[in-house]
Length: 122
Image (cartoon, rainbow, N blue to C red):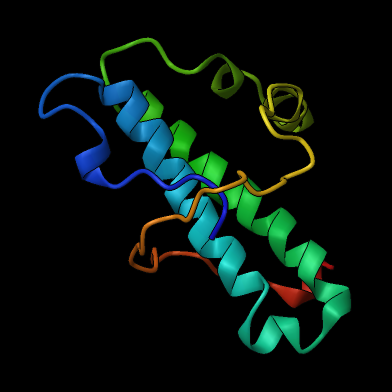
């Protein structure tokens, strides 16, 4: 709960569509990470990292699909393909250690649908 979330009320009522898509991707990723760290996956700690990696790829893939569905310039990492895309996203992490933001408590957000963890990939 110490990592940023971006409810609709965070953004001005109009404009900022790129930032809204980025915020939505972060919310989606945080939601899916929570699935990896609780429930059935958490009962098998060896699969938590694999689940988080799958959530990362699925959330960012969906973000790139949303980027390409607009008439604006796409986020630069979305232009890359395969491993180059993930290297690009990894190189731009503002918080690579994934540390919580001191003094911040994230607002409650609904669970984002659409994540499917495949334990056979691990």
